[in-house]
Length: 316
Image (cartoon, rainbow, N blue to C red; front, side, top):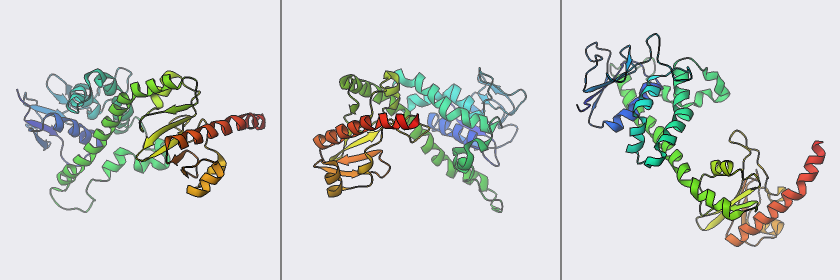
């Protein structure tokens, strides 16, 4: 039977049922989204999907709550929220609706679950404290979505429902952007792998355009590559490679003498005609031609190789 009703609880909302609604309303766009605690409404039926309410988890009955005891757990013992349950059962279909290639669906489903869904599950169940985000805790996605709830003295009888529906497209934009980014990284894999093979032992990786490259570098164990160059509009850029996603430290920085310089000043210091800009933090620079950026890359590699023995000696 066709799904005509998507049911979740009324009142205040949290990230888990809001994000569940993102998935379900895309898969069942003709279904009504109903926020209620009416007993009859939260009784399972073949035309309904009930989530974050109802006191049961039964995928055959299409009810996905996690508040009952015992609550549903992942294979590793970590708790599900309604978002995790909905993603486990409908996430693959959602990815297909977003035109993710069939061969990438399983991998992206798992990656999104680990990186995006699981933190929501843990926070919603109190299995992880918001304080783990430190001073950025107010900027986490659950906190930002929570800030869209009505203020305490909004006396409108529809305040919660109005806020939920206003928050839904915002939540959707985060989910869909993340999926698009994951899908783009998978598309980039083969392009970057081919470029790495072409680079051979060179410390300079040339890409046909700006694209995600970190995972391909890690897979290829291409630790010898220090800088990445690629065209951007009418210009070319060179960028350093971070040691990991958890730091701004790089395998090699651009020369200190270039920092913050532009145009004539950068041309004079670097000796490269066409050099246009170097960021003060020395992680990116721009030149007007491929030849100029290659020359800058070669200089940057040489400077890095010359300074490494000194840095090592000082560290010892």
